[in-house]
Amino acid sequence: MSQADTVTRILDSAEQLFAEKGFAETSLRMITTRAKVNLAAVNYHFGSKKDLIQAIFARFLTPFTQKLDKELDLVIAQKTDPNFQDVLGVLAKTMLTGVESNDAYNKLSVFMRLLGLAYTQAQGHLRRFLNENYAHTYSRFIGYLKQAHPGLSSEEIFWRIHFAIGAAVFTMSSIEVLRNMAYSDIGKKSSVEEVMQQLIPFLAAALEQES
Amino acid sequence: MSQADTVTRILDSAEQLFAEKGFAETSLRMITTRAKVNLAAVNYHFGSKKDLIQAIFARFLTPFTQKLDKELDLVIAQKTDPNFQDVLGVLAKTMLTGVESNDAYNKLSVFMRLLGLAYTQAQGHLRRFLNENYAHTYSRFIGYLKQAHPGLSSEEIFWRIHFAIGAAVFTMSSIEVLRNMAYSDIGKKSSVEEVMQQLIPFLAAALEQES
DNA sequence: TCTCATTTCAAACGATCGTTTTAAACGTAG
DNA sequence: CTACGTTTAAAACGATCGTTTGAAATGAGA
Figure 1 (spheres, rainbow over the protein chains, first blue to last red):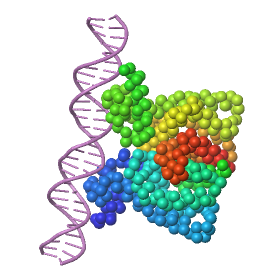
Figure 2 (figure 1 turned 45 degrees about the horizontal axis):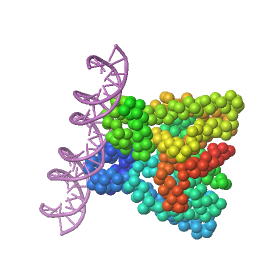
Figure 3 (figure 1 turned 60 degrees about the vertical axis):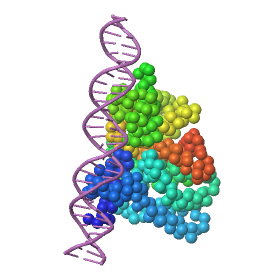
Figure 4 (figure 1 turned 135 degrees about the vertical axis):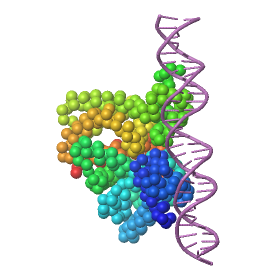
């Protein structure tokens, strides 16, 4: 078995388990058992559990922010002053790139669940890591939103964006719980894709309202 | 020291620590140390850590759902067919009852943080507990919303409500992180009350839009 | 084929966890 | 004051955690 196999298998198993149970509730023994590698492999290849957590976020976010930056470049090249929908559209497009299969939808929702954990679980090292590595693209994105909607204060923009992130992240964080609740409440178990298609207009209406 | 003192001190300390760190990340030793009681007091008075978690939710939710039920009775007595805003108004009124001081705002946000943990942390026993004890009032509330907006499908109502819960719970779950982010982003550290006053119209616009 | 760095493995480490035990301290009714 | 149920106290339990160790297995280059 090659190194890449072991590293990838650890990342895959850990990502899945962290998303299901949270960081503290997932032990390295669970991860290595599922990945069918030795317990010590995590510390050998990643250093520590904290480093493993950061590696999982990096695997998703590094290509994601690169793609988002390129898409922002494209939009700016076409229109020096993109409007609100243009900017939000870039985000949506970047998020949904390569998302055609059900499997890809699940991968996206798994990562949104992890992102929710990053906010709500007390992982100070993770917030520091995300801030050091990805804050630039985040700030750039928020900056364009501000320019696109000068009628809204910076404060309003900031909070609306995070209300929207909250709705999305929370929904995807508890998507299995919610789908079960929906089933017992209304007899229908919507797919992840159907839920997202309800979520997008919901957020659009909330983000764009006049203050 | 009387029993009530010990029980209350444990509940207060545990509530605060759970909200800060999450359930798994908070040990009984942290709780009993902060509460200045003996370690064994939790198991003596509550039975187990799980029972303690349930007791914290019961302390908030039992009077809350009782009050919500009464307020719903009042509205139904006045109007047999309350509209969307009437029903949402009942929830807002019940949530904000007794919330005038900054301290009360903080207590509400602490509980919303706990509610977020209940959704997102894998506490199967807690979801079972909440479902057994409070599902009735929840269903009643959702039922009135459906009646008030027959143009929306049950599915749309369900998901919109949970998108809104998500935005609120996520925001309050990570309110300290977000306030710090807001400060470094835009130089202003909004109070919890100010955030809520931005949140309410945001959610109202999203909930009431036509489909 | 031999060498040596890389990777895997089983085993153990110290620390911390929730819980239990046993006895002491407390408070109150008789 | 005495007796007794309740509550608090200190100590230890077994289990599990992340991490480390040292040796075995592996594999590519000389």
